Amino acid sequence: MRRLSALALPILAAALVACSSSAAPGWTYAPVPSASAGASGAAGSPAASGAASTAPSTAPSTAASASPSAAASGGGSTVLKIEAPSGAATAGFDPKTLTAAANTAFTIHFDNEDNQAPHNVELKDASGGAVQLGGDTKFFTGPGERDYQVPALTAGTYTYFCVVHPTTMTGTLTVQ
Image 1 (cartoon, rainbow, N blue to C red):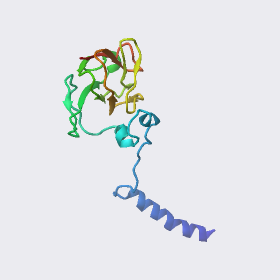
Image 2: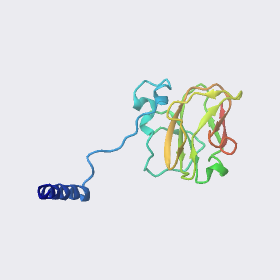
Image 3: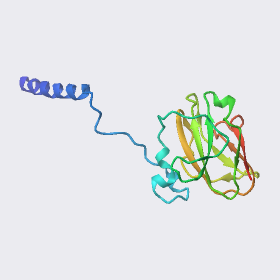
Image 4: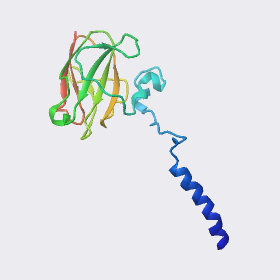
């Protein structure tokens, strides 16, 4: 019995030292890419399908904008920004209207700042049919960000909405 106690003491001391160390752990958590990202018609790699953006960002967000901007990668693609501010379940998206060029693919950058309820962005055409978006379209509680790849759309009026709050979180996308 004493031999067991004498062996346990060094093991316990080593564990205590390891747990109290200020060094970073030798591992990190990375979520598994979603199955929907690969099925979006992207090139097949997680980076190409937008799965790299599935983890919440810790970078400061910028104000939502209804105007297109160049992508951070310098690729020249159009990015439309939509934000769900705190309380978005009752206040809705910001902005509530967007404009995009017809017959040109673009990206919707969704900044979910609401930590009170889960949200996402989906898109439907004038007849109510779903527009297939690339990226992780599952709803999530903020703060966090997602990028959705939108295929080239024909001219017309489309509705963007949150699946969880489809009556209050809605907006109009005009493609011209």
